[in-house]
Amino acid sequence: MIRQYRNGILLAIFVTLMVSASNVYSRTSDLQGKAAPNFTLKSEAGVNMKLSEYRGQVVMLNFWATWCGPCRQEMPHLNELSSKYERLGFTLMGINIDEDPQRANNMVDKLLVGYPVLYDQSKAISKLYQVDAMPTTLLIDRDGRVRYVHRGYKKEYLPLYDEQIRALLKE
Image (cartoon, rainbow, N blue to C red; front, side):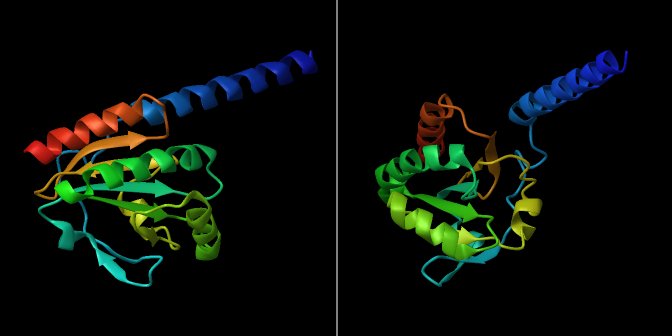
């Protein structure tokens, strides 16, 4: 009897976790359509970068962590997007949430990341942007409004990123 009860609880917990995980991908963000909250963070180059200084460009914010396998999978593709659209008015900022920036630097060097990586060690900016999944990627239009929010990583996101960037660059 106790064994069945325990198995039932474990099953209920598993189902709850699976539903929660699938909801992370499908939930819309309160930020969509609103002005992107401004922030200033230090980059791996030691320079402070302020989001508002990129008004007039299409900006992609990609929140990631070194412990996130899907983040590592996605980074080479993001590198390609950055190179492909940078000259057209597109800026990609990787925002690392690790407490130790050196771990992030090691990964950035290993993966040959070519776009700026910023450090949100306190996770204040992650909270501001309602980051609840790794990675979380936002696309911000030239007027500074959050247009698209992608939680987690799916291969289907890669061509979608490309399509959304092109559309925002044409506006």
